[in-house]
Amino acid sequence: MLSRRKLLRNLSSLPLVGGLLGGHVASATPTLTAPLRRDYFKELGIRTFINAAGTYTSMTGSLMPEEVMESILYASNEFVTLDELQDKVGERIAAMVKSESATVTTGAASAITFGTAGVLAGMDEERVIQIPHLEGTGMKSEVIMQNAHKIGYAHAIRNTGAHIVYVDTQKELEEAINEKTAMLFFLNANNQQGEIKHKAWVEAGKKYGIPTMNDCAADVPPVENLWKYTQMGFDLVCFSGGKGIRGPQSAGLLLGRKDLIAAARMHAPPRGNTVGRSMKVNKEEILGMMVALETYLAKDHEAEWKMWEQQIAHIADLVKDIDGVTTETFVPDLANHVPTLKVAWNDKKIKHDNDSLHEAMRSGHPSIEVAGWGSNPEIQITTWMLIPGQERAVANRLREVLMSASV
Image 1 (cartoon, rainbow, N blue to C red):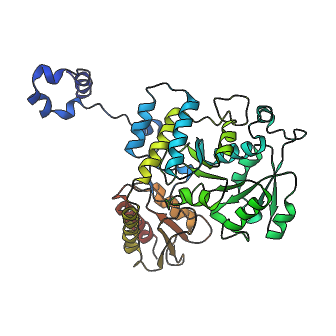
Image 2 (image 1 turned 60 degrees about the horizontal axis):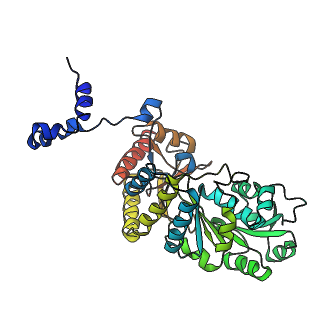
């Protein structure tokens, strides 16, 4: 007997079946000709989850819109020259974000490495090859940043061989600047934590003729950040492509001065003997990043924001009446600037600590990831990575987890 699976496979291999049997028969049985969808993650034993946490790399960033996937599929069927594609896409992106120049990189960390290397070596091919071995080359070798901006991602600077000099005050910054100073690096997310703010950092760079770079990896939304910092005067600005813009997770953007972007490209594939050879971005990602940006800029951002607020309110409303639970909605000023719900609880009334509540949300049905890690009994939830409607599943599951541990 012919199984249903074999029947479906056989019918799907007959593209002319509608013509042979007549349009009426073909249209009456559309599901019979649809290919079966292969569940790769299930095959691999990987459990998918609802992302109520945010655009974390460990959680594979964001979901790409259909338009981006179409562009990736389109690019996969054609050959082009990599440099020409970067040139043309860079021109298009620069125009969209009101920047002098732009290039697609492999994430924001790669943008930092390429940008730093470009500042160090300029357009000198011999110097390009010498990076990260700077001693005796005549290249500058120091990058200054604030202690308050110290992060692990600064390793992307050290990839180039540059040494990081840390300062705390405007006076220390000016005293640290010398003939070895190549660049001033700024972490946008920590603007409020450092003594030296955006504009003062840029002014110092202009005063001493030193390029400034701003790491804005997670600083979209708001949309205007895509041009705010280049217009403020930063010479180079880095963004992640796979977070709020919803491009490929392995893509990023380096925006800024035309001469510095050209110098950064000297370290990027297809060139081989460079610090950036391993940071290859393929044609699918380059085109996908362009289309992701087009799609993002065309959004109704106000409507999307209202939807996020409504989703957050729905979740809060379903749990805030539980004895011992408090909720607070806030929006971070910088980085992950979206409506965020903090849910805290009295661990004397609800027998969960932070870790056990995370695990309860993760191990339930459906599996749900939330943010907010630490010693306090509280979590954070965002809705910007949810598929509309999933907020109900998040709210119901969170209420169930909290109520089941109530005493």
